[in-house]
Length: 209
Image (tube, rainbow, N blue to C red; front, side):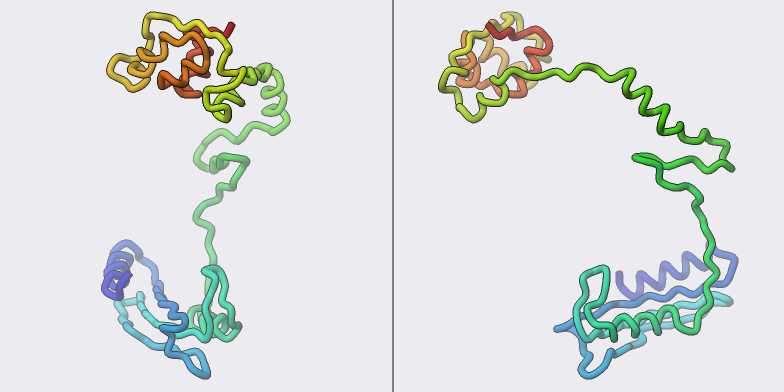
C-alpha cells in the first residue's frame, strides 16, 4: 500500500493497542528501479511518533533482485536486518497455542474444546467402515477417446423413458435428447456426456446390455 495507507494503519493500531509498539514498513526496490550502485541505499519516507508508539517507513534500494522469499545478494539481507532488527529488543509472545493435526487444527485446551482423537482409533474406524471399491466398466475409460466409434460405441443400452432430471436444467434437456439412444455411440451423438452416463447408470436410469 501507499505511505498514507500505512499511516492510517498506524493510527488504527494506536487506537486499539494500549502497550508501546513500533511499526516499521519497508519498500523493497529491486533493479532496475533500484538506485543502489556500489552499496545498498536506504531512504526514509516517513516517520511519526504518538506517545509510546512510533512509525517508520523506508525504501530499501537493493543491489540485486529477490525470489520473494530471500535476497540474491547477502548485502541486501544484511541491510534489511540492520533496518528492521538491529538495536531492537523483541519479546516474543505466542498468541495462538493451537497446532496443526492432519487436515485440521487442535483446539486450545483452555477453550474447553475436545482434543483430537488418537490416530490409531481413527485408522481402526476407517478400516471398519471402508466400503469395497467400485470399478467402472471399461466403457467409461474408452468412450471419450473413441469419440463414439468402435466396439464400445456399439454396446447396447436401455434408457428409462420418463425424464428424472430437474425440469428446466441442462441435464433435463440432454436427457430428453439421449433417452432415445439404443447404443452408447448414439448416446454420445445425441448429446450425452460421460458424467451423464456414469450418473444415470448409478441411479438405474441407464443400463448396459
